[in-house]
View 1 (cartoon, rainbow, N blue to C red):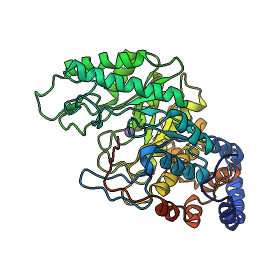
View 2 (view 1 turned 180 degrees about the vertical axis):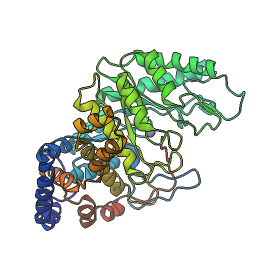
View 3 (view 1 turned 60 degrees about the vertical axis):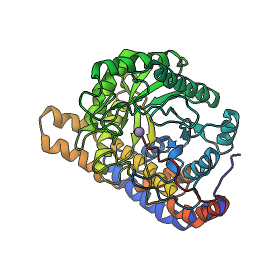
Length: 430
Ligand SMILES: [Mn+2]
């Protein structure tokens, strides 16, 4: 029996109020999909089995480089964060794992593991941090970390990643995600080739320490904090890294880490084709690395990414096993609500992509019928799959309407009374 942060009778009461309408909506949609030769229960089963990890740093209020406006009842430490993550998973049943960030979440590994297990949660990829200076570190990362010109600073960054692996081993994680902020602000400041050589050399040491059943995810990002050049700036460089390091190395795609209007779904297809797609950091953006809620700005792009993922899943693409994680910054919403809605949006894109008539699409592509090919995708995207998502949640013991159940529970008010407000603090959104 796992601990539930929200009382079961509140969830039941909320579900009872919505159960009859949901069943009718589900049956109506089921009839419609049946006419298209799609079994709705099979889609619901796949959605129920689909999980996306929650980043520990996502449950605190984020911030920008201008300011951070803390919300009530913010988690004081990693154990409060795990409790908040448990709320998200209890109501959505879509987020069975938490992704930790070291050093922010550093704590006794056995206590971390016990706390997660108490709530029925597991741990996803470990995230290292060499983009800011920890209070107790000897050398600064102001001018870089794994690609720093100074060998001792590179050594310190390597050692930090090795420590992340050790902590991860103790808590049952199976992957390390590495994102560095290394780069330059001025032309001439950094030698592109030498910096990348230093990075690769340092990462080879990290790679060598990976347990046999682990994967290494490297994350590219076009700019910020460096504004002229960034060492791991795009998917091409990321692919080169994964190739250089070896079979356990894969590329992680953060949806916000590209130039505006870049065809991300095509990058995804390329990485799948060559067996190097490691996984995702889901979020949405309007201008840059905005870290807005997944699907909040451009749900069609999220759908098109999932169209590639479902295509690969259904044809059994070799080595296809992407990790799914949210990576967002919540500045004006309750982070728990944003993360619940975002997890459901990711599931929605997956469900919609499962509805694409792939045989018809392939036919239209072969016949060069551009209009009907585009319409085939649109038919799936336009389908309101909410009854499927809600039904999947309900069958797994979650809430038909997670936000309504959460608000009815008064959880935020309760933890606000227990947790004194935190001023400032790290944003730390990568
Ligand atoms: Mn990210």
